[in-house]
Length: 220
Image 1 (tube, helix red, strand yellow):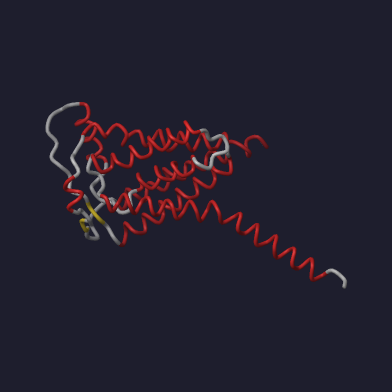
Image 2 (cartoon, rainbow, N blue to C red):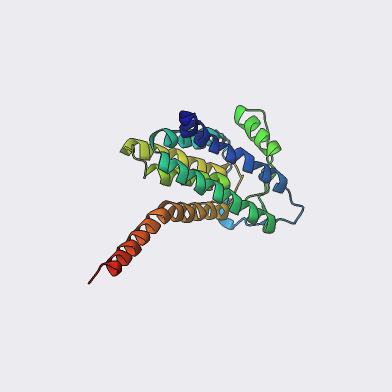
C-alpha cells in the first residue's frame, strides 16, 4: 500500500489534465460572441500542412515529459503539473469572458497532412484560442527541462527544439495567432516561476522568522 501511495496515486494526478479538458469542450463555441485577434503579421504567416506533425505530437510530448519528471524528479513533476493545471483553469476563465476565434483556410486534396488537419479542424472548433493551451503547456515543458535533476545539454536542447516546433506549428496550421502564442508563453512563464520559487521563498521566510524568534527568546 505504501508503494501504491508513493507511485500510483501521484501518477494518477495527470488525469487532472483530461478531466479539466471537459471544460474546454463546454467552452469551445462562439455562443458568448467571439473576437478576432488576427494581425497583419499573422496574415503573412504561410499555411504549412506538414506542421500538423509537431502539432499532434504535443500529446506524446506533454505526457511523456510529465512521466519522465515523475520518475526522475518528483518535485519538478508536481510543480510542472500544478503550473499546467492552474494555467488551464486560468485559460478557461478567459475563454468564458473573452472568447476569440481564428479564421481557417480552405482545405483541398486528400494528402495525409490535409486529412490530419481536416480531422483536427472537425474535432476542435475555431474557438478557445487566447491564450493557447498548446503553447502554454509546451513552453512549461521547455522551462521545466532546464530545472530537471537529470538534465543534460542534449536533453534540454531536444525538449526546446520539440517544444518550439509545437509552438510554431499552432501558427502554421492556423489554429492560433501570434497574440495567442505570446499570451501562452507569458502565462506559462509567470505560473512556473511563481510555483517553482514560492515554496523556497516561504521556507526562507519561515527560517528567518524562526531564527528571529529564537534569538528574542534567548536569555540575556
